[in-house]
Image (tube, rainbow, N blue to C red; front, side, top):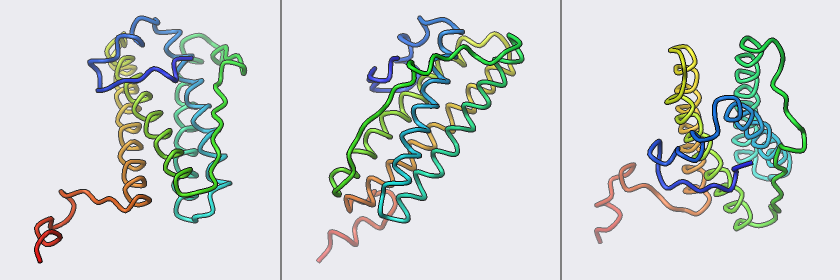
Length: 174
């Protein structure tokens, strides 16, 4: 699994994924969605903050929905569910016992969402038809939306703010 592949941008860095081929990409995407669901579901059940738990529960629900979309497309193309080896689904371990642990979990989620969005953008580039391209683009946009949600959660936990979101001058004037 390429979960550890780091990307510093969007589609321009999708070459590693694009080299895999459509079937392998699709299986990779299903495995990633399951790994994300497993992580987010576990976090939603272990985080003490109700707001944080709710955020991860929503992300988990979305990721399982993505997996179902991927599996439905595969079944229409090949007449069966994708051949997923349960051992290919990465088990992501992380301890959440402090605020820094929460930030670590959120940063891990942020990296996952960015990589997932890049994967779907690569799949859209190589899509053989408009419906598949549209599905991949929609999934990429949803993952970028998750990226924004997680980034906002990091800001909330760390006390950071976005200078575009507030009247910045009011914060620096005496």
